[in-house]
Length: 304
Image (tube, rainbow, N blue to C red; front, side, top):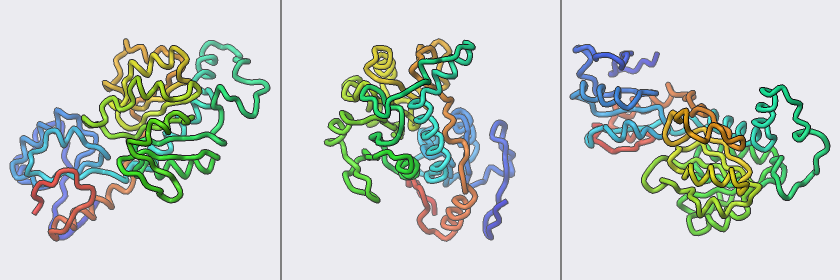
């Protein structure tokens, strides 16, 4: 338990009514709270000045927090778990683990997945050695992932708002994105959910990717036109896709994405483990009490 002079920490179950004696709280730490409960909680805290969310992109909080309330996020807490999960999805796709699992369920020895294989196949990406990986949304998670990919022999390029070279990685901006897509073997999407990123990967941009390419999304489901993605995979214009996020979530049971053999789906499981959260909370609480700038500010509010 964190202990800081000048601050009282109380653990509450946000599924119920907040006790009267705690409704004078100025600060609340939020993690994994459904949007309806966020609204219910905020309505019970008239003195609230600051919400510290442990989510990297707490859109559910930002959409409901009053303008005068400061909102800080959990950027940096999820880098390692999400990078690890992303690497797993990439390797599962390239090494066709999803097809092997389907064959196992059928009790079928899938000879087409084994046997002699060429060192290089111009029509399929089967290894990260020599593969060109484009990470769209080059931030903290991308930096963590880059090390894993480079260790396995991949060439990594980033895409972000500002072009630059970062630790030897070339990062392109919007004007260079489409040309880069044409030579990408694995496209990793780590875009936040916003109006500007809605269907950023649309039918036009999907068509630029080589047919051997894989798309992996661990950002937000809204960043991809899912119908266009499904059609590209079904028609063989894309080798496959691995989605940890969908639109909507949870993915409805009647979604055709479930039945497509070339698509891997995990249930928004890449994160879920904010690492070193106590350290971030403590640093921000101390800054709040001292009237100093806080880390990961997403909505300025008026904290002091």
